[in-house]
Amino acid sequence: MKPTVLAGPLSVLAALLYVVAAGASQTQGSNPPKWWQSDLYKRELNLTAEQSRHLEEIFQAAVPKQKELKKALDEAEALFEHLAEQRDQKNAGEQINRVISARAELMRSHSLMLLEMRFVLTPQQWSKLGALQQQQQKANEKQRASEKSK
Image (cartoon, rainbow, N blue to C red; front, top):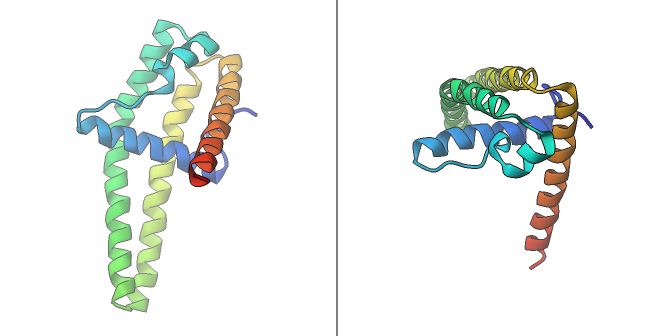
């Protein structure tokens, strides 16, 4: 399965959360692994140093916008929660549109970043990336299931 710019909702959400978390944790001094810097992905995809550098530049350029949009989403969701807790049905109902719009903007920004990254890779690399990400997702799900059963 090839990764798409607008993949299934869970894939996009998972990738989106990773990017947002990566951007947030970078401000706290830690650097989460990025697939284009991973030895496994570099080797499996035959990434060149130039490709890896270019992917990092795309990511770094997107981080400030992602943080800004994530903050706007968090604020819209917090206001919605407040209005719902106050049982203000009219204003909470109106706030839902703001939450949806903020989430859509964040996803749009992330999708544009992915599209830009896609064009750095060859079609073969992009296809292989999708397969590697599927394998990783299955491994993560298996690990989570194993941890829950303990």
